[in-house]
Structure formats: C-alpha cells, structure tokens
Length: 222
Ligand code: AP5
Image 1 (cartoon, rainbow, N blue to C red):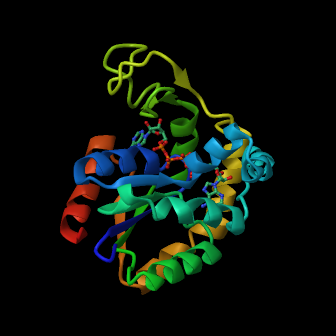
Image 2 (cartoon, rainbow, N blue to C red):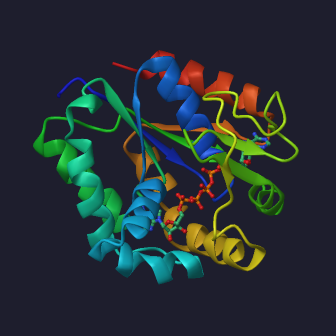
C-alpha cells in the first residue's frame, strides 16, 4: 500500500470535516475513516471499547489514545483502503500523531496532506445544533445550510429517517471546543513542520470549501 494517498482533516467540531470528507471520498475514490463514527458504532454495538468510550464522548472529552488507535489500526489495513484514506477526526493528540507517523513509516508511507479547516469558534455552535444525518447512508444535512432537496427525504439514498447526535448540545460542544484547542490545535504545527500542512478557509459556503479542498487533493494525491 506504499502509494496510498493519506489525508488528514484537522478542525474543531462543526468545521465541516465529515461533510467535506464525504465529498472528497466520492470524488477521488478514497475511504473516509471517521474515528467519531467508529467510536459511535462501538458504543452502539456495546463492545468493551464502546462501553469505555461512551461516558467520555457524552461529556465532550477525548477517548484514550489506546482505544482510538486499536479501533483505527485494523480499519486502515482493510483492502478497500488501497487507493487512499481520509482521516476525519484523527489524530487528535500529540500521542496519536506520533503513533500514526510510526505506523505509516513501518509501511513505507507518510501523510500526503493535513488539511486544516480554519473557522471561527462562535459559528460552530450554530452549525452543530442544526446538524442531522440520514439514518440509512450517513449523509449529513443542516436545518439552514444544507437541507435535503425534497424535505424529509435523503438526496443520496432516498431514506426518510434521520438522526441527531447525543453530544450535539451546547454544553458538550463547549467541552469539545475546549478539548480541540488544548489537545488537537497544536498538531497544526506538527504537520507544518513535516511540510504537509494545507490551510483552508472553512467559513465559506460548503461548495466553495469543497472546491478549495478538491484543488488541494488533485494537486497532492498519488
Ligand atoms: P467526532 O465525531 O469526530 O466529532 P467532532 O470532531 O466534534 O466533529 P463533528 O463531527 O462535530 O464536526 P465536523 O467537523 O465533522 O462537522 P460536519 O461536517 O458534521 O467526535 C465525537 C467524539 O468522539 C469526540 O468528542 C471524542 O469524544 C470522540 N473522538 C473521536 N475521535 C477521537 C480521537 N481521534 N481521539 C479521541 N477521541 C475521539 O458539519 C457540521 C454541520 O455544519 C453539518 O450540519 C453541516 O451540514 C454544516 N456545515 C459543514 N460545513 C459548512 C459550511 N462551510 N457552511 C455552513 N454549514 C456547514
């Protein structure tokens, strides 16, 4: 898998990592790996990792590096990732970034680009509180910024059931923003040091952000 494209999406809760990861995955044939989604699946399945993660996620803190790495490592090695992966919500701590560097180096790989979605914190509460996703295919929507073309029907799969996340309340979002600034924002300097940082103005509308990110991936992808 030495020629895989390895993209990292960095940004606070609500920056648009999930929204843009899905667009890039479709356009470039990459696989979106969201540690948030993997952890929520573990919680729903009631696995040991899921039971350990549940309370931390509900409080807006960060799940231990050990659990996150165990969940992600196997998924990164699956055959459908041969063309490349988009890491959405990982790494989130210096320990995770160091572990990822080692894991990739062992396979002769390296991070292709770390795209940093730059936003104002104040706007993130509104983005998160209006968010909902299709229960069938996971497509993301927003009450104001991205409504389904036909109300109540998913544009992508035609599903009619939608979910809102348990951790999308003002109090938990404030904690998630705090965790981001304390533990994840410092990673921007790490990837700048590696020469792979690509900042994007993510306060623009969704299509403009997608165009800016698409141009970066078209330039750097293997
Ligand atoms: P996770 O699921 O990763 O959540 P997050 O980082 O808080 O990010 P979000 O999913 O809330 O935001 P997003 O940037 O994807 O925004 P979205 O595209 O949906 O993590 C959840 C929890 O799991 C963590 O708190 C932690 O406990 C745990 N966890 C996960 N990974 C971990 C790790 N590596 N280590 C430790 N713990 C971990 O967009 C938001 C809304 O805005 C949508 O409705 C969208 O339609 C809209 N929108 C998007 N872009 C725009 C735009 N440009 N303009 C207007 N609206 C927009």
